[in-house]
Length: 197
Image: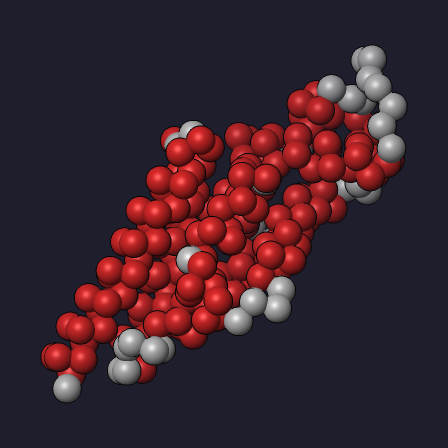
């Protein structure tokens, strides 16, 4: 199988991208290293030169997107995330790694050996949602529910947009989901504070 010689770091990123797509389409159990090699246009030997196993490769796919998310949020206080809108920080990462992002959110929880990655992402999304919503929602139980709900709604919304939305329309999506989440948070706060005193 002919292939161009790439520096190891570039080849690694190419294989991670090919693997993300293969795993998303076929699932972890039904995807082989041969499938990844075929998608990347290289031999299986090249895949094994960089990744010692399928588990190593799958972990690398998830870690790549999780690390990129971490870099974007590093040093950002929740107030700045609220001001900018979390989607403006997360969506560019999702666009850089669309299949890996969807694997991380939608599929990693169903793989016990890899659930940590998705759990970590969920914990951070809930942390930021909670820090922002705590300014508006006073009841602890409602705040906990709202934080889980808003975080999931945001990331699910981004995944759905990756499924059907064109990149050139990202600004429209960003404005709509940000306005929707802010309006929803305001409605939750008003309603809970009125009903709970």
